[in-house]
Length: 145
Image (cartoon, rainbow, N blue to C red; front, side):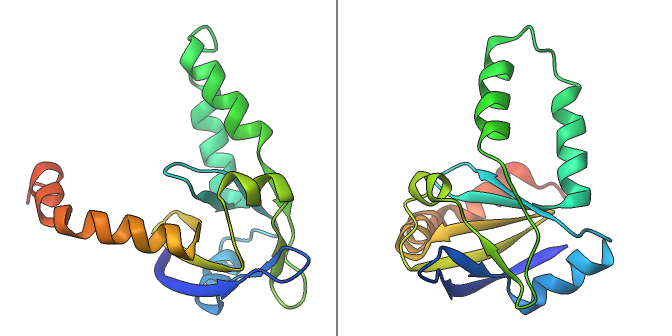
């Protein structure tokens, strides 16, 4: 599982280093590949191979006769890029995904349980600033202990 926030930079070739803390869960899952695709709220989603297969199976179970399902699947899967980290644990972020998420040089890589999200640092800071005040209200609505 993935947890935490990390500031990293895209290099001149649009490569991004996977934070050291995320490497072990990826290795433990037996995944050799990572999948990056269009996320929600202006970020990119990244999945280890085993979780990607789980997500793909969930989408396969959805009826293709529903227009919204077809539209979402087209955008989600057509945007996917398969990547195998190099020896320095760098992956390539394709230009079309960089543009989709408005990534600049500085990015935030955040762990969100079963996935990793990649945000432009300024966009993440804006999202966080506007959302942190609602944190307790959201918890009250969603979580019952």
